[in-house]
Amino acid sequence: MDLKWFLVRRITLVALACFAMGAALAIYETALKAKRQNAELAEMAGRQLELQLSRIGRSTDTLQRFPDWDLITSLILQPGQCVELRNSAGATQNLNCAGLDATANGTPGWFLWAYRALINDRLTAVRSVSYRGVSHGTIVAQYNAAATAGHTWASVGPLLGFAAALVGVLCLVTYFVIDRALKPTKQILTGLNRLTRGDLAARLPAFRLRELNRISEVFNALSAELGSVTEERTALARRLVDTQEEERRHIARELHDDVAQKLSALCANAAYLRTRVQGEAPALAAEARDLERIASEAMLTLRRTLTYLRPQEIDDLGLVQSLEALVAQHNASSQGRTEYSIETSGAVEKLKAETSAHVYRIVQEALTNASKHANARSVQVMLTQSGEADGAKIHLSVVDDGVGPGGQSNSNGGGAGLIGMRERVVALSGKITAGPLPSGGFGLDVEFPTLQRSA
Image 1 (cartoon, rainbow, N blue to C red):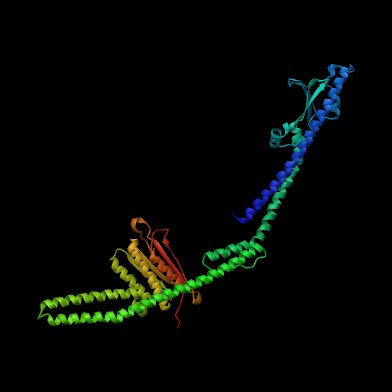
Image 2 (image 1 turned 90 degrees about the horizontal axis):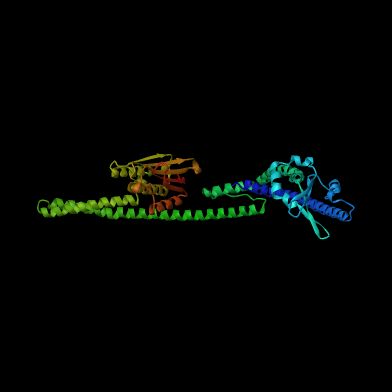
Protein backbone atom coordinates (compact mmCIF):
# COMPACT_ATOMS: atom_id res chain seq x y z
CA MET A 1 0.00 0.00 0.00
CA ASP A 2 1.18 3.52 -0.81
CA LEU A 3 2.51 5.27 2.30
CA LYS A 4 0.60 8.49 1.61
CA TRP A 5 -2.77 6.77 1.35
CA PHE A 6 -1.94 4.65 4.39
CA LEU A 7 -1.33 7.77 6.50
CA VAL A 8 -4.38 9.58 5.07
CA ARG A 9 -6.54 6.58 5.89
CA ARG A 10 -5.23 6.42 9.44
CA ILE A 11 -5.79 10.15 9.99
CA THR A 12 -9.30 9.83 8.53
CA LEU A 13 -10.06 7.00 10.91
CA VAL A 14 -8.83 9.10 13.83
CA ALA A 15 -11.04 12.01 12.70
CA LEU A 16 -14.04 9.70 12.40
CA ALA A 17 -13.29 8.29 15.85
CA CYS A 18 -13.21 11.83 17.26
CA PHE A 19 -16.53 12.58 15.59
CA ALA A 20 -18.02 9.37 16.98
CA MET A 21 -16.87 10.33 20.48
CA GLY A 22 -18.37 13.81 20.07
CA ALA A 23 -21.66 12.39 18.82
CA ALA A 24 -21.72 9.86 21.66
CA LEU A 25 -21.14 12.66 24.15
CA ALA A 26 -24.01 14.71 22.67
CA ILE A 27 -26.33 11.69 22.76
CA TYR A 28 -25.30 10.95 26.35
CA GLU A 29 -25.96 14.51 27.51
CA THR A 30 -29.36 14.58 25.80
CA ALA A 31 -30.31 11.21 27.27
CA LEU A 32 -29.12 12.29 30.72
CA LYS A 33 -31.26 15.40 30.54
CA ALA A 34 -34.32 13.38 29.49
CA LYS A 35 -33.76 10.87 32.29
CA ARG A 36 -33.43 13.69 34.82
CA GLN A 37 -36.67 15.25 33.56
CA ASN A 38 -38.46 11.89 33.86
CA ALA A 39 -37.18 11.49 37.41
CA GLU A 40 -38.36 15.02 38.32
CA LEU A 41 -41.74 14.34 36.73
CA ALA A 42 -42.17 11.03 38.58
CA GLU A 43 -41.17 12.67 41.90
CA MET A 44 -43.46 15.65 41.40
CA ALA A 45 -46.38 13.47 40.27
CA GLY A 46 -45.87 11.12 43.24
CA ARG A 47 -45.96 14.00 45.73
CA GLN A 48 -48.99 15.50 44.05
CA LEU A 49 -50.90 12.22 44.17
CA GLU A 50 -49.87 11.56 47.77
CA LEU A 51 -51.08 15.08 48.65
CA GLN A 52 -54.37 14.32 46.88
CA LEU A 53 -54.71 11.08 48.88
CA SER A 54 -54.14 13.12 52.04
CA ARG A 55 -56.96 15.48 51.10
CA ILE A 56 -59.18 12.52 50.31
CA GLY A 57 -58.39 11.10 53.76
CA ARG A 58 -59.42 14.42 55.34
CA SER A 59 -62.61 14.42 53.19
CA THR A 60 -61.55 17.64 51.43
CA ASP A 61 -61.36 15.86 48.08
CA THR A 62 -63.23 12.98 46.42
CA LEU A 63 -61.85 9.59 45.38
CA GLN A 64 -63.45 9.97 41.95
CA ARG A 65 -60.98 12.75 41.08
CA PHE A 66 -57.94 10.49 41.81
CA PRO A 67 -55.52 10.82 40.14
CA ASP A 68 -55.66 14.55 39.41
CA TRP A 69 -53.05 15.42 36.71
CA ASP A 70 -54.15 18.99 36.04
CA LEU A 71 -51.37 20.73 37.91
CA ILE A 72 -48.76 18.33 36.53
CA THR A 73 -49.81 18.52 32.90
CA SER A 74 -50.09 22.28 32.95
CA LEU A 75 -46.76 23.08 34.61
CA ILE A 76 -44.32 20.13 34.42
CA LEU A 77 -45.13 17.81 31.50
CA GLN A 78 -42.74 18.39 28.54
CA PRO A 79 -43.61 17.85 24.85
CA GLY A 80 -43.53 14.12 24.09
CA GLN A 81 -43.39 13.20 27.79
CA CYS A 82 -45.90 10.79 29.33
CA VAL A 83 -46.85 9.95 32.91
CA GLU A 84 -49.04 7.05 33.97
CA LEU A 85 -50.26 5.39 37.13
CA ARG A 86 -50.07 1.62 37.27
CA ASN A 87 -51.83 -0.53 39.87
CA SER A 88 -50.16 -3.27 41.84
CA ALA A 89 -50.83 -5.73 38.99
CA GLY A 90 -48.97 -3.49 36.56
CA ALA A 91 -52.06 -2.41 34.63
CA THR A 92 -52.33 1.22 33.55
CA GLN A 93 -54.98 3.10 35.51
CA ASN A 94 -54.39 6.49 34.00
CA LEU A 95 -52.12 7.85 31.23
CA ASN A 96 -51.40 11.42 30.32
CA CYS A 97 -49.06 12.58 27.55
CA ALA A 98 -48.03 15.90 26.08
CA GLY A 99 -48.00 16.37 22.33
CA LEU A 100 -44.83 16.14 20.23
CA ASP A 101 -43.11 19.29 18.98
CA ALA A 102 -41.89 19.89 15.44
CA THR A 103 -38.35 18.74 16.30
CA ALA A 104 -39.32 15.06 16.19
CA ASN A 105 -40.64 15.23 12.62
CA GLY A 106 -37.19 15.65 11.01
CA THR A 107 -35.56 12.64 12.65
CA PRO A 108 -34.29 9.98 10.15
CA GLY A 109 -35.95 6.60 10.46
CA TRP A 110 -32.70 4.72 11.04
CA PHE A 111 -31.74 7.04 13.90
CA LEU A 112 -35.20 6.76 15.48
CA TRP A 113 -35.06 2.96 15.28
CA ALA A 114 -31.58 2.81 16.83
CA TYR A 115 -32.50 5.28 19.57
CA ARG A 116 -35.69 3.39 20.48
CA ALA A 117 -33.86 0.04 20.56
CA LEU A 118 -30.74 1.11 22.45
CA ILE A 119 -31.49 4.16 24.63
CA ASN A 120 -35.10 5.21 25.12
CA ASP A 121 -36.18 2.38 27.46
CA ARG A 122 -33.30 3.24 29.79
CA LEU A 123 -34.65 6.75 30.43
CA THR A 124 -37.86 5.65 32.19
CA ALA A 125 -38.32 6.85 35.83
CA VAL A 126 -40.48 4.88 38.30
CA ARG A 127 -41.85 5.97 41.74
CA SER A 128 -44.29 4.21 44.03
CA VAL A 129 -47.31 6.09 45.49
CA SER A 130 -48.38 5.22 49.06
CA TYR A 131 -50.39 6.82 51.84
CA ARG A 132 -50.27 5.68 55.47
CA GLY A 133 -48.36 2.52 54.49
CA VAL A 134 -50.83 1.52 51.81
CA SER A 135 -49.59 1.34 48.21
CA HIS A 136 -51.84 3.02 45.69
CA GLY A 137 -49.81 2.12 42.57
CA THR A 138 -46.66 3.09 40.72
CA ILE A 139 -45.96 6.21 38.69
CA VAL A 140 -44.04 5.70 35.44
CA ALA A 141 -42.63 8.74 33.67
CA GLN A 142 -41.09 8.33 30.19
CA TYR A 143 -40.56 10.10 26.91
CA ASN A 144 -41.97 9.14 23.57
CA ALA A 145 -39.04 7.72 21.56
CA ALA A 146 -39.68 10.13 18.69
CA ALA A 147 -39.46 13.10 21.08
CA THR A 148 -36.13 12.22 22.67
CA ALA A 149 -34.70 11.02 19.37
CA GLY A 150 -35.74 14.31 17.80
CA HIS A 151 -34.01 16.34 20.53
CA THR A 152 -30.90 14.19 20.17
CA TRP A 153 -30.88 14.45 16.37
CA ALA A 154 -31.21 18.20 16.65
CA SER A 155 -27.88 18.15 18.48
CA VAL A 156 -26.13 15.42 16.48
CA GLY A 157 -27.39 16.25 12.98
CA PRO A 158 -25.51 19.54 12.53
CA LEU A 159 -22.45 17.92 14.09
CA LEU A 160 -22.67 15.12 11.52
CA GLY A 161 -22.73 17.53 8.57
CA PHE A 162 -19.92 19.60 10.02
CA ALA A 163 -17.87 16.49 10.72
CA ALA A 164 -18.34 15.20 7.16
CA ALA A 165 -17.15 18.51 5.71
CA LEU A 166 -14.30 18.68 8.21
CA VAL A 167 -13.14 15.12 7.43
CA GLY A 168 -13.24 15.86 3.70
CA VAL A 169 -11.16 19.01 4.06
CA LEU A 170 -8.84 17.26 6.50
CA CYS A 171 -8.24 14.40 4.05
CA LEU A 172 -7.47 16.83 1.23
CA VAL A 173 -5.12 18.95 3.31
CA THR A 174 -3.50 15.90 4.87
CA TYR A 175 -2.87 14.35 1.45
CA PHE A 176 -1.04 17.40 0.14
CA VAL A 177 0.89 17.90 3.38
CA ILE A 178 1.95 14.26 3.52
CA ASP A 179 2.73 14.24 -0.20
CA ARG A 180 5.07 17.18 0.29
CA ALA A 181 6.63 15.71 3.43
CA LEU A 182 7.22 12.32 1.79
CA LYS A 183 8.68 13.56 -1.47
CA PRO A 184 12.15 12.48 -0.37
CA THR A 185 10.90 8.88 -0.20
CA LYS A 186 10.58 8.90 -4.00
CA GLN A 187 14.27 9.73 -4.23
CA ILE A 188 15.04 6.98 -1.72
CA LEU A 189 13.05 4.43 -3.75
CA THR A 190 14.76 5.56 -6.95
CA GLY A 191 18.15 5.12 -5.29
CA LEU A 192 17.21 1.66 -4.01
CA ASN A 193 16.02 0.61 -7.47
CA ARG A 194 19.28 1.82 -9.01
CA LEU A 195 21.23 -0.09 -6.37
CA THR A 196 19.14 -3.21 -7.08
CA ARG A 197 20.04 -2.93 -10.76
CA GLY A 198 23.71 -2.86 -9.82
CA ASP A 199 24.33 0.89 -10.13
CA LEU A 200 26.71 1.29 -7.20
CA ALA A 201 27.28 4.95 -8.08
CA ALA A 202 23.78 5.80 -6.82
CA ARG A 203 23.79 8.42 -4.04
CA LEU A 204 21.06 10.19 -2.08
CA PRO A 205 21.06 13.91 -1.24
CA ALA A 206 20.79 15.29 2.26
CA PHE A 207 17.24 15.71 3.60
CA ARG A 208 15.79 18.16 6.11
CA LEU A 209 14.06 15.53 8.21
CA ARG A 210 16.49 13.91 10.61
CA GLU A 211 15.19 10.37 10.12
CA LEU A 212 15.26 10.60 6.32
CA ASN A 213 18.68 12.23 6.40
CA ARG A 214 19.97 9.33 8.50
CA ILE A 215 18.62 6.93 5.88
CA SER A 216 20.47 8.94 3.22
CA GLU A 217 23.73 8.75 5.16
CA VAL A 218 23.46 4.99 5.69
CA PHE A 219 22.47 4.42 2.06
CA ASN A 220 25.40 6.43 0.74
CA ALA A 221 27.83 4.70 3.06
CA LEU A 222 26.48 1.28 2.11
CA SER A 223 26.59 2.09 -1.61
CA ALA A 224 30.18 3.33 -1.35
CA GLU A 225 31.20 0.23 0.61
CA LEU A 226 29.51 -2.06 -1.91
CA GLY A 227 31.25 -0.22 -4.73
CA SER A 228 34.63 -0.62 -3.06
CA VAL A 229 34.06 -4.31 -2.31
CA THR A 230 32.80 -4.93 -5.84
CA GLU A 231 35.83 -3.22 -7.36
CA GLU A 232 38.15 -5.32 -5.21
CA ARG A 233 36.25 -8.49 -6.11
CA THR A 234 36.33 -7.59 -9.79
CA ALA A 235 40.06 -6.87 -9.66
CA LEU A 236 40.71 -10.15 -7.84
CA ALA A 237 38.59 -12.13 -10.31
CA ARG A 238 40.35 -10.43 -13.21
CA ARG A 239 43.75 -11.34 -11.81
CA LEU A 240 42.67 -14.92 -11.21
CA VAL A 241 41.24 -15.56 -14.65
CA ASP A 242 44.04 -13.64 -16.36
CA THR A 243 46.55 -15.71 -14.45
CA GLN A 244 44.67 -18.83 -15.44
CA GLU A 245 44.75 -17.82 -19.12
CA GLU A 246 48.42 -16.94 -18.88
CA GLU A 247 49.15 -20.32 -17.29
CA ARG A 248 47.19 -22.07 -20.04
CA ARG A 249 49.11 -20.11 -22.65
CA HIS A 250 52.39 -21.09 -21.01
CA ILE A 251 51.43 -24.77 -20.82
CA ALA A 252 50.24 -24.72 -24.43
CA ARG A 253 53.48 -23.11 -25.55
CA GLU A 254 55.57 -25.66 -23.67
CA LEU A 255 53.57 -28.57 -25.09
CA HIS A 256 53.79 -27.14 -28.59
CA ASP A 257 57.50 -26.36 -28.44
CA ASP A 258 58.60 -29.53 -26.64
CA VAL A 259 56.17 -32.43 -26.71
CA ALA A 260 54.75 -31.66 -30.15
CA GLN A 261 58.23 -31.42 -31.67
CA LYS A 262 59.27 -34.73 -30.13
CA LEU A 263 56.09 -36.44 -31.30
CA SER A 264 56.71 -35.10 -34.80
CA ALA A 265 60.24 -36.43 -34.69
CA LEU A 266 59.01 -39.80 -33.40
CA CYS A 267 56.46 -40.01 -36.18
CA ALA A 268 59.11 -39.18 -38.79
CA ASN A 269 61.54 -41.75 -37.39
CA ALA A 270 58.82 -44.39 -37.34
CA ALA A 271 58.03 -43.66 -41.00
CA TYR A 272 61.72 -43.83 -41.94
CA LEU A 273 62.12 -47.11 -40.04
CA ARG A 274 59.08 -48.60 -41.76
CA THR A 275 60.51 -47.68 -45.17
CA ARG A 276 63.97 -49.19 -44.46
CA VAL A 277 62.80 -52.53 -43.11
CA GLN A 278 59.73 -53.01 -45.27
CA GLY A 279 61.48 -55.34 -47.69
CA GLU A 280 63.93 -57.08 -45.35
CA ALA A 281 61.82 -57.60 -42.23
CA PRO A 282 58.03 -57.34 -42.83
CA ALA A 283 57.33 -58.04 -39.15
CA LEU A 284 59.41 -55.04 -38.09
CA ALA A 285 57.70 -52.97 -40.77
CA ALA A 286 54.31 -53.76 -39.21
CA GLU A 287 55.62 -52.75 -35.78
CA ALA A 288 57.01 -49.53 -37.25
CA ARG A 289 53.64 -48.84 -38.88
CA ASP A 290 51.89 -49.27 -35.51
CA LEU A 291 54.43 -46.96 -33.89
CA GLU A 292 53.81 -44.39 -36.62
CA ARG A 293 50.02 -44.67 -36.10
CA ILE A 294 50.30 -44.28 -32.33
CA ALA A 295 52.54 -41.23 -32.73
CA SER A 296 50.06 -39.67 -35.19
CA GLU A 297 47.12 -40.28 -32.83
CA ALA A 298 49.10 -38.78 -29.95
CA MET A 299 49.81 -35.75 -32.13
CA LEU A 300 46.09 -35.31 -32.87
CA THR A 301 45.23 -35.64 -29.18
CA LEU A 302 47.89 -33.08 -28.34
CA ARG A 303 46.54 -30.67 -30.94
CA ARG A 304 43.02 -30.94 -29.46
CA THR A 305 44.47 -30.32 -26.01
CA LEU A 306 46.39 -27.30 -27.29
CA THR A 307 43.23 -25.97 -28.91
CA TYR A 308 41.36 -26.30 -25.61
CA LEU A 309 44.14 -24.72 -23.60
CA ARG A 310 44.72 -21.79 -25.93
CA PRO A 311 43.21 -21.72 -29.43
CA GLN A 312 45.92 -20.49 -31.74
CA GLU A 313 43.31 -18.67 -33.83
CA ILE A 314 42.68 -16.12 -31.07
CA ASP A 315 46.23 -14.82 -31.32
CA ASP A 316 46.72 -15.42 -35.06
CA LEU A 317 43.31 -14.86 -36.64
CA GLY A 318 41.29 -12.98 -34.00
CA LEU A 319 38.20 -13.60 -31.88
CA VAL A 320 35.57 -13.73 -34.62
CA GLN A 321 37.32 -16.38 -36.73
CA SER A 322 38.08 -18.38 -33.58
CA LEU A 323 34.40 -18.40 -32.67
CA GLU A 324 33.43 -19.29 -36.25
CA ALA A 325 35.88 -22.20 -36.14
CA LEU A 326 34.41 -23.31 -32.80
CA VAL A 327 30.86 -23.20 -34.22
CA ALA A 328 32.00 -25.12 -37.32
CA GLN A 329 33.57 -27.76 -35.07
CA HIS A 330 30.26 -28.23 -33.19
CA ASN A 331 28.34 -28.43 -36.48
CA ALA A 332 30.68 -31.15 -37.65
CA SER A 333 30.33 -33.05 -34.38
CA SER A 334 26.51 -32.85 -34.33
CA GLN A 335 26.25 -34.38 -37.83
CA GLY A 336 23.10 -32.41 -38.62
CA ARG A 337 21.22 -33.12 -35.38
CA THR A 338 21.79 -29.54 -34.17
CA GLU A 339 22.48 -26.44 -36.23
CA TYR A 340 24.94 -24.01 -34.67
CA SER A 341 25.17 -20.43 -35.97
CA ILE A 342 26.94 -17.21 -35.03
CA GLU A 343 26.33 -13.53 -35.78
CA THR A 344 28.69 -10.68 -34.93
CA SER A 345 28.49 -6.92 -35.34
CA GLY A 346 30.53 -3.94 -34.22
CA ALA A 347 34.23 -3.62 -33.46
CA VAL A 348 34.48 -6.86 -31.50
CA GLU A 349 37.85 -7.62 -33.12
CA LYS A 350 39.44 -4.72 -31.20
CA LEU A 351 39.03 -6.36 -27.81
CA LYS A 352 42.10 -7.06 -25.73
CA ALA A 353 43.63 -10.51 -26.00
CA GLU A 354 42.61 -11.33 -22.41
CA THR A 355 39.06 -10.13 -23.04
CA SER A 356 38.85 -12.13 -26.27
CA ALA A 357 40.01 -15.22 -24.41
CA HIS A 358 37.28 -14.74 -21.78
CA VAL A 359 34.58 -14.35 -24.44
CA TYR A 360 35.84 -17.43 -26.25
CA ARG A 361 35.81 -19.49 -23.05
CA ILE A 362 32.24 -18.36 -22.19
CA VAL A 363 30.97 -19.31 -25.67
CA GLN A 364 32.92 -22.56 -25.55
CA GLU A 365 31.36 -23.56 -22.21
CA ALA A 366 27.86 -22.55 -23.34
CA LEU A 367 28.09 -24.55 -26.59
CA THR A 368 29.50 -27.57 -24.75
CA ASN A 369 26.57 -27.52 -22.30
CA ALA A 370 24.06 -27.08 -25.13
CA SER A 371 25.50 -30.02 -27.06
CA LYS A 372 25.43 -32.26 -23.97
CA HIS A 373 22.12 -31.34 -22.38
CA ALA A 374 19.84 -29.24 -24.60
CA ASN A 375 18.71 -31.75 -27.27
CA ALA A 376 18.18 -28.62 -29.37
CA ARG A 377 17.48 -28.23 -33.08
CA SER A 378 19.34 -24.92 -33.20
CA VAL A 379 21.81 -22.99 -31.08
CA GLN A 380 22.48 -19.35 -31.93
CA VAL A 381 25.42 -17.22 -30.77
CA MET A 382 25.22 -13.41 -31.09
CA LEU A 383 28.12 -11.09 -30.29
CA THR A 384 27.52 -7.37 -30.75
CA GLN A 385 28.98 -4.04 -29.74
CA SER A 386 26.74 -1.06 -28.92
CA GLY A 387 27.57 2.53 -28.09
CA GLU A 388 30.73 4.45 -28.79
CA ALA A 389 34.01 5.36 -27.10
CA ASP A 390 34.09 4.86 -23.33
CA GLY A 391 30.38 4.02 -23.13
CA ALA A 392 30.58 1.11 -25.57
CA LYS A 393 29.40 -2.28 -24.37
CA ILE A 394 29.69 -5.84 -25.61
CA HIS A 395 26.59 -8.02 -25.56
CA LEU A 396 26.86 -11.78 -25.90
CA SER A 397 23.92 -14.19 -26.05
CA VAL A 398 23.72 -17.94 -26.57
CA VAL A 399 20.18 -19.21 -27.12
CA ASP A 400 18.92 -22.72 -27.82
CA ASP A 401 15.44 -24.12 -28.46
CA GLY A 402 15.91 -27.45 -26.74
CA VAL A 403 14.90 -29.22 -23.57
CA GLY A 404 17.02 -31.17 -21.19
CA PRO A 405 16.62 -34.78 -20.08
CA GLY A 406 13.08 -35.69 -19.01
CA GLY A 407 11.53 -32.84 -20.98
CA GLN A 408 12.76 -30.14 -18.62
CA SER A 409 14.21 -26.91 -19.96
CA ASN A 410 17.93 -27.16 -20.40
CA SER A 411 19.79 -25.93 -17.35
CA ASN A 412 22.59 -24.58 -19.51
CA GLY A 413 25.61 -23.55 -17.59
CA GLY A 414 24.68 -25.26 -14.36
CA GLY A 415 27.22 -26.30 -11.78
CA ALA A 416 30.90 -25.63 -12.26
CA GLY A 417 30.37 -24.40 -15.84
CA LEU A 418 28.17 -21.51 -14.75
CA ILE A 419 30.54 -20.71 -11.89
CA GLY A 420 33.44 -20.43 -14.33
CA MET A 421 31.41 -18.21 -16.65
CA ARG A 422 30.35 -15.97 -13.77
CA GLU A 423 33.98 -15.59 -12.68
CA ARG A 424 34.96 -14.47 -16.17
CA VAL A 425 32.02 -12.05 -16.40
CA VAL A 426 32.93 -10.55 -13.02
CA ALA A 427 36.50 -10.14 -14.27
CA LEU A 428 35.04 -8.20 -17.24
CA SER A 429 33.00 -5.97 -14.86
CA GLY A 430 29.87 -7.26 -16.54
CA LYS A 431 26.51 -8.88 -15.84
CA ILE A 432 25.28 -12.37 -16.63
CA THR A 433 21.80 -13.86 -16.68
CA ALA A 434 20.99 -17.46 -17.49
CA GLY A 435 17.78 -19.43 -17.35
CA PRO A 436 14.86 -21.00 -19.24
CA LEU A 437 13.09 -18.76 -21.76
CA PRO A 438 9.31 -18.15 -21.70
CA SER A 439 9.05 -19.42 -25.28
CA GLY A 440 11.06 -22.54 -24.46
CA GLY A 441 14.72 -23.38 -24.57
CA PHE A 442 17.48 -21.72 -22.63
CA GLY A 443 19.18 -18.36 -22.87
CA LEU A 444 22.52 -17.02 -21.68
CA ASP A 445 23.06 -13.24 -21.75
CA VAL A 446 26.31 -11.46 -20.94
CA GLU A 447 26.99 -7.74 -21.05
CA PHE A 448 30.21 -5.94 -20.16
CA PRO A 449 31.95 -2.66 -20.97
CA THR A 450 34.29 -2.68 -23.94
CA LEU A 451 37.97 -2.92 -23.14
CA GLN A 452 39.83 -1.90 -26.30
CA ARG A 453 43.52 -2.35 -26.73
CA SER A 454 45.52 0.73 -27.54
CA ALA A 455 46.31 1.48 -31.18
